[in-house]
Image 1 (cartoon, one colour):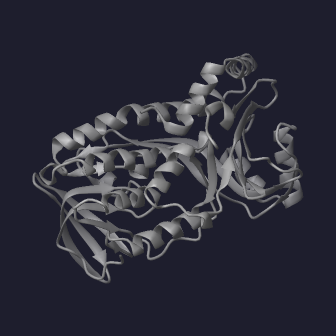
Image 2 (cartoon, rainbow, N blue to C red):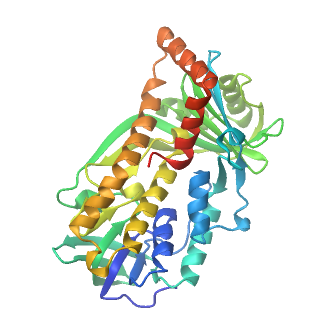
Image 3 (cartoon, helix red, strand yellow):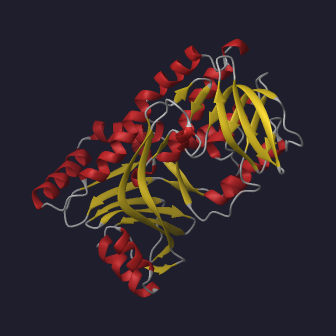
Length: 389
């Protein structure tokens, strides 16, 4: 429901109504906990990004009632990974993984609109256009200041969950954010392939930086990582010149691209927190970690954060909500998955960054070995779909 007033106290305050915060709120709607979602945006943005969701993430959203055919998601049934200038490549398929699909691609704008619609129609109050400006952590509760409708309101909560961004977390004592700039930009665009994509996603480790092609309807969504200088130059190209450079990078490993939509870009960095809990505080999603888009694991990891925290809260006595023992357990349960995915993603970026020929050929042999080893290939697919929990 849309909140018409700001409560003075709740059991759980969720800061951020994006996919991660919405999943947690929807799960807690079935409990006897009082919950409030504070969302800074008055309405979902018309965001053109394409999101790659694993089959596991798709199931989490569906089980919580946050999925609908109107999203027009495009299944991913095969993932093809290759490296420019070498023969090495590996393929992951949904049949080998024993799944109907490895994942799917959905418009962020459509998903955000559906989530807002479901939150507005559900029992958990949603406070729109509400910015949490300060947080004070006490033994028995946390107190936040919320700017809403021209006024500042004080709200106390047994537990505050930061689900979007890390701006507020960076201001809190005993929580340190670590940022690793990659000095890379990601170019985004929707492309038209010369032949049908057959529900295949491509990950191409090109010499100038990794690029991904995700099936999105009849088109392919491009995420092309490169230096800021190359990104600026390629954004300035006309469509024909841009497609020529892109097709040269693909070198026949993916279908030829014959048309490109509008292009934009954003800078890339790895951001992690030294702790994902504090006194009466838990961090999930982008508040806990922001990853490089290679392998498309950021949102999937955040949804598993929300799922783990929701499971703990669903089965806890009210007196346990936000207690240090409960938060320590959440941090312990998330450590392995978050650490493994962060290390894997950052490792891919660094491993494929160097153009040194012997290292490049060693990487090619590694891809060939993985493709020939069925158990290792299936284990990789399982971790990409379900994480390392």
